[in-house]
Image (cartoon, rainbow, N blue to C red):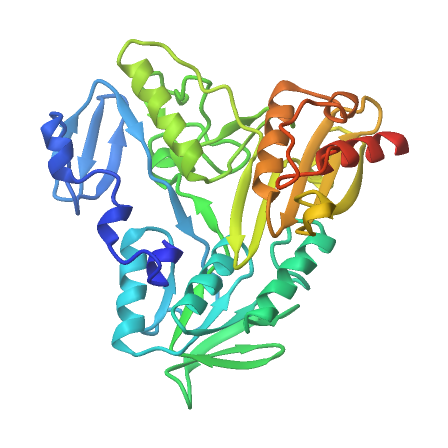
Length: 398
């Protein structure tokens, strides 16, 4: 959606996976602009806002997330948006064009805020990011996030660190002004990109069990605490194969897999969704940014004793030049088992994290990863890939 807003993707139709008409061809009715206000599991009935009552044999809850909105004045002013779905993206893009916008203020320096800064830059719109921490993308190690900050600044994005937004009001030289404890920043549009929360309100009102993450609790078949009700996507939990805990990580690939698993089980062809390792990535101008598994803090919470290192190198053989990449590995001090990885680089970061996601999925340790068989050619890596050298270096410290 950020790439649609930034006009990299010009046709919104390309963001629609399947139209209502296409669903109809497969015998599936789609009712748009129809709000569910309640579920009665004792009678297997869904209650709609227009007082219709729809019976079901099986029910799938896929209510997604809701944007986290801070408690401050001015949130209802025209031009203040959050980005959660395609409708939000269309509204934002329309506003930017109608107002001939040349400046946007983003509150939040996480995934959405960073991706939006790149998309807006592509559309020729100057961006200011207001972030509560010293560096963007605080899931990443500070040394890697610092590279992201350099990339933002190299492309003219203003990053206001350690700042708290206090209010939004009408501006003087622009329609809107964000007041913070570090100053005032004006723009034609304000985007709230502070994060999302699982939307489990309907499930909670129906009496479904809610997990510790705040999302709907499910089993490996995507069943909820009520046997004929399933939950899939951003509103429900997934089993994390490294922490061995149920978590909520709202990503589209996870949602797709969970939806297919639920459909298979409802259709009588059993399938399980065995979990996740938390792999995620985004692009920031010329940088690839990716992570998988646990951070040190998450590892401690899961009962591990983590050790970590950061290895700097090149995504290709040095004889062909240098394409900088930094790779952080996190492992259990006692067993040498890999627990997590983070990477930032001008090439090859996502590919390395994908390899390490498979290592996490299969439970490999540093000794195995340090000698794992990887495809080698000078344009893509040195003979000893940065994965090898990082694993061997961390193993020597344990």
